[in-house]
Image (cartoon, rainbow, N blue to C red; front, side):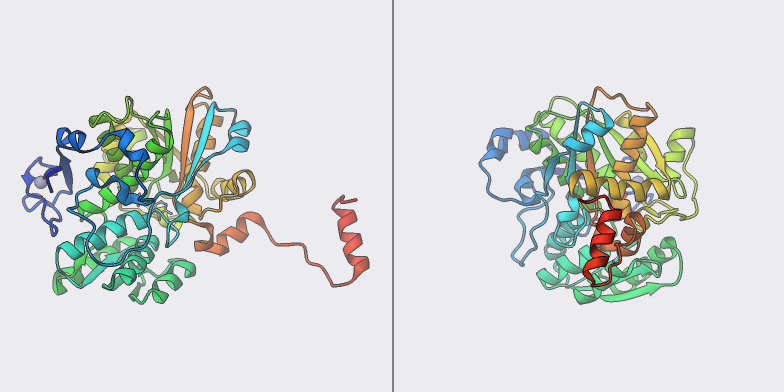
Length: 412
Ligand SMILES: *Cc1c(COP(=O)(O)O)cnc(C)c1O
Ligand SMILES: [Zn+2]
């Protein structure tokens, strides 16, 4: 990989060769970060080149990714998700510009597909035939789907609270699924044990440094979809912290390669009932574990696995932290649906809930431009979707009833 220099430990700074099986720092156990040669990247690709590319997936950015090529195995089409100018919501919030990036449109319906697509390519490079992960749900279903397409075996550990929509996906994708009766932390530990024992490829985003590189493609797309004119703020939800760290890495890569001339500020959104990273930023203290008390299961992460990278990303971007209640998340689900026609799961819309709250509370200015990333699709968690929007009008199949009901609704 001519574009990659090394893998650097974010805790102790030690540098290693980036091999397909690279995981954490052998010295201190810290998470590694892939370091690029931006002069080389610049010599290979320009922003103008991108316009001519017909690869409508995350792989259109190969020069910025830690891969030789994308391997021979079949792939799902991941990335190049829709980017909408959210006119109605923009007007409602009174901000200069607001865009919504809908990553729920990915093949298994979440942003996690970007990391799993990367995992599958690296697993092929590593010449293994089995991949394993633990997940609150979406990392698992995306791994199962991307692995199924590519012909890998998968073993998956989920906490027993994972919503049925997600579990049903991974079972249909043919994964062997372990539903752990415990917290996400306990689930993670079980998967680590199994990976160690059986030598499987590790698709745990907080251990495998390549996965964040897949996630960063959402930022590369946002920049390109904005015509390389950077937005002031990007809002997204945060659990383990790999997504926000990836998003920040993507923007920094583009800045270093001269594709964009400024960096956005990140709005890190967590749930009030589980916000260890935002709390650490707000109090300027080290993070401490919290209970996992929110309906937004994908960000119910009491012990964040990528805390250092996430905290660095929020601080470096001069970011803003906002915590939202479950009710605010449910309201945002309805709001996005009604104003944009975008259907997100609770964690998927939490970024928008936080953006709305930050604008309303004056934490961020109205005369600024915003991008809100929707990270997962609403069909993942229909129980909460119904909670957000309520039940339909029940109607007996009798004409008089119909007229009566519509009269009550004020329909003439
Ligand atoms: C995983 C996930 C997140 C949070 O990403 P982290 O890397 O855990 O911070 C947010 N939303 C959805 C839908 C997710 O699946
Ligand atoms: Zn180290």
